[in-house]
Length: 468
Image 1 (cartoon, rainbow, N blue to C red):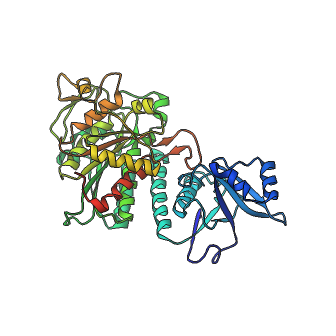
Image 2: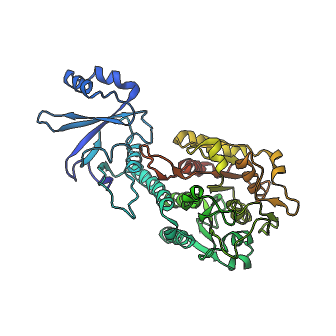
Image 3: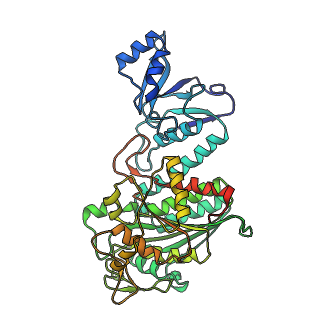
């Protein structure tokens, strides 16, 4: 149990705990001036200077631990305590009175640092426990931690245990937990109900393609804005007949990272009981190789009525999203937000930590950007540069699913834009969904990116309801 919630004062209903005193790096000299000579001498010997992600165990007179000093970058750093759960001696820990780090930040930070993916391998050790009093801010932190853990768990799980059916199971579990309505179209039903692009990409797999749909909220209350969330659910991507190389295919279990984000965001919205009408869509497929796999050069139909020439079967994510975005827009939501592990070009441009973000509506982007800054959950805006539409022209179809060798993240976004009406506000987030190396609170493997920012933006709609 990484966080222990108690009803009374810290320590009253649990075993003794050690106190965590956070010290901002910039305030270390002031801290030293106000402490004892003995403490100053000890910290000099241990070379503790309150650098971020460091700590010092202060001894007591009997040789035990009196308290723990923790170096933090700032009081609102979401990863301030993330280095502690797996590093401190086993036991319980509590925030110092008048801690500069709030209980909400500390709780989330602690849980992000305590995360371990142990489905197939036993953990080396249990995390330490942060002992906190029950409160609304602890509940908020717990809900966010659960959503981020959901993204990480889904992305980290190998495809054998995380195929289209498994994503469906997760969506159905969420619907059951929060009283939402769930529906799905499977296999040839996609053709019957006019989702031909999703079917084309997923038809070669032994696990049939699906479109998952979840609706939640008061459908009859039009003062609650309708929000459409779409997540790319390519559970494994071989590249299709344009087969990926070994290194490129190795981590393609994570190609459903967009779906993981969409499901996690839906969980957050419903757990917080936001005053919105939620419409969640996840096209879930495997891009497999078989005799009936879709081919380079084919022309694929879409729900929108636009035809797509397949320049490369490895550009499949945008193809399945075309049907999902079209369907989402049919209900005229206030905003359509899609998450997708869409392009390597976004990673070349921005690296693994910055999700490439495209938006066709200035007011909505301003809100997302402000939330991103406030939540320390970075995004980076990329342009919907209309001149590059020429790169996705086709001689025999309305569009090609591939552009030129340059501007790949932009041409992919422009492709998606064709399936969103011009008057429909839309945000597209090209996420990596992965940490290539471990850092405090961000272990190597699956990761939620932009999730906190988007949720904070939607929370802001409680007061304003709509964005002009």
